[in-house]
Picture 1 (cartoon, rainbow, N blue to C red):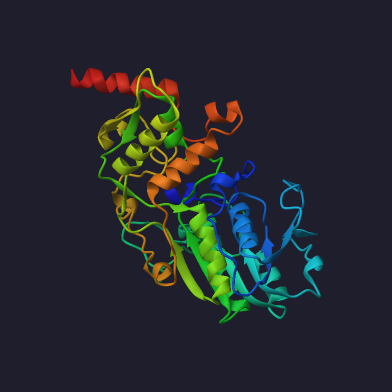
Picture 2: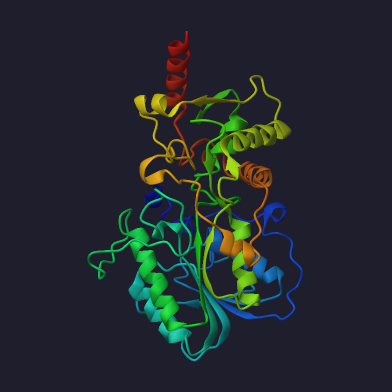
Length: 372
């Protein structure tokens, strides 16, 4: 399955409770407290964004359907409504900024953005690098985005997610001309992400023994720590930053060897192993022969060829120039494992991403037989 399919809903996974040890990075109070409206608010990205904004001293309001995690952040005002037309609760109110974390359909984004344009000074829309039709070549914010033959389509799936996000961007920026910004994150990772698309790796190392790693230790990948994303969004509001920004780690900076080493080191800090964890890197051709799927069974990884030839080549230079900070990979790994080990036992053992244990054992056995 293509990466743009699996990046879908990157910010929307439900989460466990935040634990202070790995909550949003410690922040000083902002020079000027602001009133910020968050469309969405209580899920993975919104969770860390809220924690960071509150720590900075800002006053928040949530707008959502009020169906999940309503006990979180009791100090935050809640306005109940629905993106699909039920937005009257936003009328006759004013905020310094609005962050749209839950816009997937252009009609919904247009509706809220146009309503708020006269009452809110700044708009931040959280999009995705999935707006780019492929990653056959390096991408930056000037690269062409995907398009839909029928722009009235509202069904969100792997084929439409990226182009719909691009149309959402256009609707938001048009309503807030000169006062809007678009954030395009890559794979969002870190504590509280129970999609397991990154969590799999530290969790697998913690199980011990040999585990499959894809391709080569030199293979590059890109992610964004959810706390870095949250901090950049709030930083952008505080500094009236406008424009469009890719939010990913540095081009070709993070390598899989560094990832697996960090996962093993983090696991060893927390357990005494009968059989210590060890990454066994299997060539792309062998993985393909044994039908080990990139991205879903080997999370955060795709072979760098074809439409994914520049898999780790999306530029973050524009965001870096505006203050984006990238956490060390080892910290993201360590904090993610620390959080993972607080999850209910069933969630720890039944991960949503990554190769199944039985299949992994079979493929490893085939690899050893192939070498003998």
